[in-house]
Length: 248
Length: 375
Ligand code: HEM
Ligand code: HEM
Ligand code: SF4
Ligand code: SF4
Image: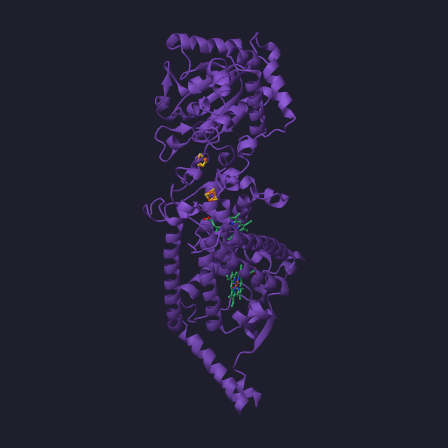
């Protein structure tokens, strides 16, 4: 009976995002949203109409407090993800993010043609290139990590002046190099827009991949699994840079 | 500073007495200065002793591309002894603005101090050095500012860069900087330089820097940017008396509104206090009378590098070159967001055409499986 349906590709379950990556992802998404909202308030506070005296409210104070709490979580979470890029599974490995081979660039170009220009490859609309991130996504996350770094450097650089803890003080050189807090703060503000644009495109693309590929992209950040056609799996498995293999 | 080598000079205290000040005035002045430079009370004795015993320090004060607001600020600092003793008659061997001599006489005085006190004099510089067009924009006695700077700094024990001009170039170095105005630290790298930025710096701060040097014979502790920590380690915002309104989220929305009358925080009027390191909130101006924020005006960040180019005076964001005067980062961001959302929408529609076959195949497969379950 089941033979009748053999032409339907079998899907193979692959554990791509380990628990720490998923935890990192959602904590990161949450704190970034908090940082953007509180950052907007800090940069341009709403004109609150209030009949209270200053002694009875602490609005800006709370927004800044939230911003700094989220900032610390963001920072340590980021450090943790960098660490996991060395000890995690191959899909989380740093090699997935930094273009180090011609293959990486070729794959980026193919992704660009197929997913953005909607061109066909060998008459086919889809080409299952990757199981974890595709090369383009990986590279965009690399840029995102650079934006994380910029935001941490400028943020803690600004914070250094108001803190007595050694950790933020380590960043005091940042405004000194940039020539003062005014510019540091503006860079901090400008790069916020990168995060906003990234979030829009990123969330859209997650939906897009889920819709077009039907491989469980959206749920992968929940349960950790993606589903790959058996034959594609066999064909492409050797192409995914595998740090465990190359190490041997 | 090696005092032994300086030819006999009266001490500061002797000069103070000669000018008719009482011991009481002198001690008052010393306590004031000790407090300003951030020393403990016990240091009052040390400062007193220094001023009583040390011969006066030779000072050369050069004026380049500047507006003289630093000198103005200095001679108006709260305690008359500052102007009378530290600057006016006694300490200044050469200052184009304040000395009586002029022309060849003045040049002779300069030469004289430079040779007599080689390696011992303090060089105070007011103004930036225009290096554009071979320095023709500011020449004194037939020499360019740069030539004079190089000659005079040669034998200086230390350099004090007064004001934003000498410390970071100030307004004359704003884009496009037609005269090539350059701050001192970019031209002289082999001498200790104390930057005392501000447009102008607070008179008491200037006096404090000098008294510190006198007392301890070495430059005060500097921050990473080269400013004395005692005066520049806090933001105006950290010592501003309007800070409770900031924390409460109560802001002036326009200069003539009810909130302005109530003395709310000036943040939304473009106040740069949160990004400006200066002592205005503590020391204040004109002998502690007031300071800009107390007078209802936002801080413009006058002691910060590039404050002219880094934003508008009454606005917190800065305009973007090439995008028109009104375009700040948020306006650009909003446009970029609109474009992104539109592009995403177009892509979503295009997907349904471009990938129709794939999507259709998946649907057929899915339906078949669904039927299998039914049968
Ligand atoms: C503010 C919102 C978000 C931010 C800042 C964000 C950020 C990121 C980052 C930095 C990565 C790279 C992860 C890594 O390997 O270290 C990533 C991957 C991923 N995210 Fe998000 N994310 C957000 C929202 C979402 C949402 C709402 C979903 C799903 C419903 C999602 C699903 C995914 C998936 C599936 C991946 C792996 C993608 C791939 O390989 O192409 N994200 N995200
Ligand atoms: C995704 C990350 C972040 C975003 C989107 C963000 C956004 C913002 C924005 C928009 C502002 C207002 C700037 C202005 O006045 O124009 C701000 C202020 C600030 N942020 Fe962040 N930020 C982020 C991360 C951080 C981090 C990691 C720190 C580290 C401590 C930090 C510390 C600060 C500080 C100190 C201020 C100035 C607050 C004040 O002076 O009251 N931020 N942030
Ligand atoms: S007026 Fe300026 S310096 Fe004072 S609290 Fe408000 S923002 Fe800070
Ligand atoms: S309040 Fe700001 S602009 Fe005004 S003098 Fe002080 S540092 Fe300069």
